[in-house]
Length: 78
Image (cartoon, rainbow, N blue to C red; front, side, top):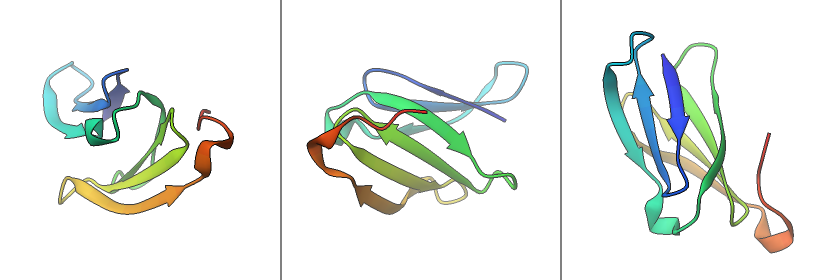
């Protein structure tokens, strides 16, 4: 599985062949997704946002399971 993020706050999960499996939407934060990291078991996805938040997604439920607010000190990037 491959995760692709965009400046609009949307994340697409795709098969290696490019077929979209699911879309996740962090655009309510109105900030770009700067980085993504998938857990080794492909159950969770962490996304770092431009406004300093880190969102942890439950990929089975396709929702945010945990939010870490790192403040406006800097963007979250990898």
